[in-house]
Length: 347
Image (cartoon, rainbow, N blue to C red; front, side, top):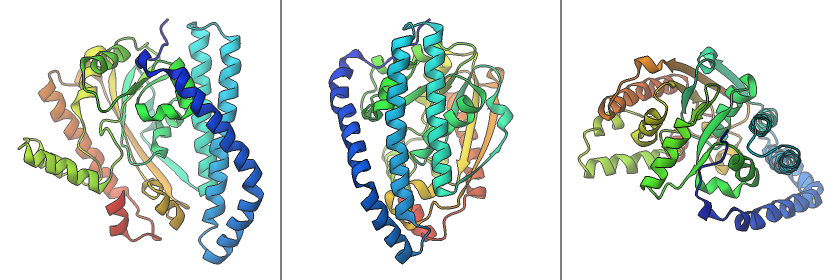
């Protein structure tokens, strides 16, 4: 059984981890030493600002993240010692660790920021092997596939993540022990394409693939830059790209490669809203995230109903992404603490 990550060996993981793991441990020690004083300051700020003790909540969120990192690394170390590398048990234990880590971190953030989760169409998340295509607007929504699919149903997931996330020690170590790919977004060479194709072709019947087709988190400024680029290139997709207000135009590349590698896989779309107040520190500090409801809607398209050919597949993607954009527009609730126009400018 192959569970190896497809990231290039030339990335020198040992050299990277010599820096990131000690930095994490040092940051955790500093947090523990300073947290009593910081908590007092946060309480005083909360009493003065009267915005739900946001400073204290942010301090707790940082502590939660650091604790999950340290515990996750410890569990990964123990699992690595006790489990034969490359075995079915190796995969299952690390999938369970990944699901626990993502689910526990998300649950903790829910409690700290008083977030609620409402999911429509959850049945679409269960079934045959599938490619899961979520909207991307916040770092927090990167946890949603793990929470909704692996944590709740035990489905092993293969992720395509940006290479920059390798500086997160837990994602780096556990992610590289599973069949994931940390993509270099600056490279569009055959090596990257072959890695994505392999990731799909080796997918087991009980697994799923997760890809964020937008390629980056939504921001109006990013949307403007993309549209301007399409105008300059006189791209025929400009009109339908411009029709998307709350999402970025979906990219065909990764989806097409996944279809080539796993033609038997269904497609599951995951739309969501409610995380717009968790897009930047400014929004967090304003209290925009407090008490928000994260609404999600999922739907599945059978592999038999998926089009063949790149042009038809791109048309299909824009069609489904248009449905997602419309749903987000109907359900999005912009926080009252930040003016709607200001929030939209910085999402």
